[in-house]
Image 1 (tube, rainbow, N blue to C red):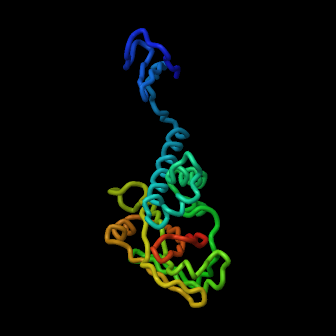
Image 2: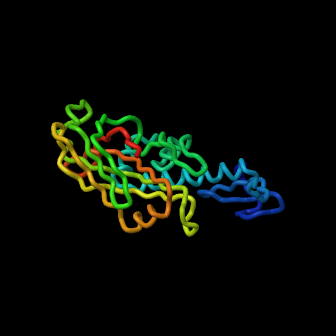
Image 3: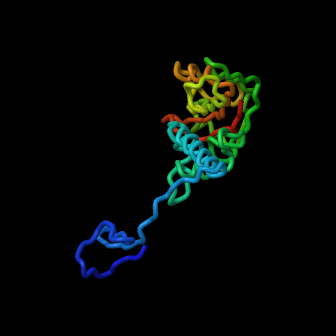
Length: 227
């Protein structure tokens, strides 16, 4: 696109033949008018669009979670939005109709957890862990509570009334943080989530534990558990 420094035509906007005139912030620009774009219908083109669409929806769910979004804001490079950064990180781990186990709902590695038991049913996600013990990443003078946050992905529908997959997020109530005692977390699925659970054959949950300060702001997070 070229910029017009002096215009003998006054203010010009719109198309003239194959040329398009635009005004932005008081400056005039001229560009070649784009030809009509017809998306490819070959399997490779369709697959790219479906992967891109699933990447967008997965990133939107993470970005809409109030506990996860501030974590991503803190690491997003200048010039990018948290949503765009999430999508950039996770795009390699998205398939046409699947979110692989390598996808991330938090950036990088978190503190380690030892799972005692975990279950994921149509009514709840339940996680029990052994004591976290002392971690150089956790400061109990600042981090007062801990919460389980999950992003759920369902695919392979059993019912023709639904699309090919379903994405949603879920959080447990926050509870006091202890590094020396076993901890148990329970998230009850909402009625809509339970309905969709029963309409799909495959169910996957990406689970992290997030520590919170006295103002309920996220501080640290665990490694991701996929069930």
